[in-house]
Image 1 (tube, rainbow, N blue to C red):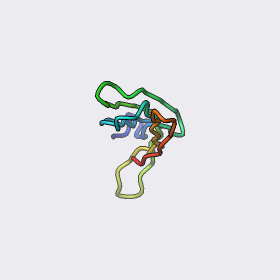
Image 2: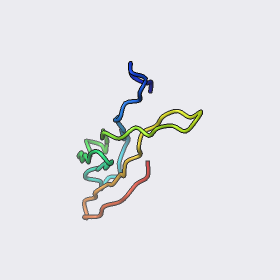
Image 3: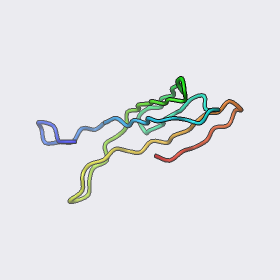
Image 4: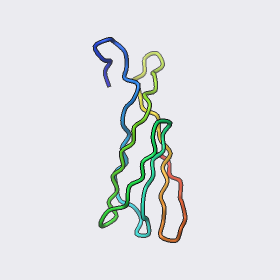
Length: 85
C-alpha cells in the first residue's frame, strides 16, 4: 500500500477471506469497524467474502496494514462459530 498523491495513506482498504468451509456451513460473516458483510457458502463449500476495513497506521519502520475483521461461520444446525483471520 502506498500513500496517495498528498502523501497520506488511504483511510479505508479491503480485507478478503477465501477458501473452503466445512460441509455444514451456510454463510460467512465479516465484521469490521466500518462494515458487516455476510455471504452464502457456494457450491462445494467455496467461500469469498470482501469487507471494507480501516487502514492501520504503521509504527516507525513498519508497513501499513488493515484492521483484521471478526469472522463468523453460521452452520446448518444454528451454531455461529467465530474464526480468527
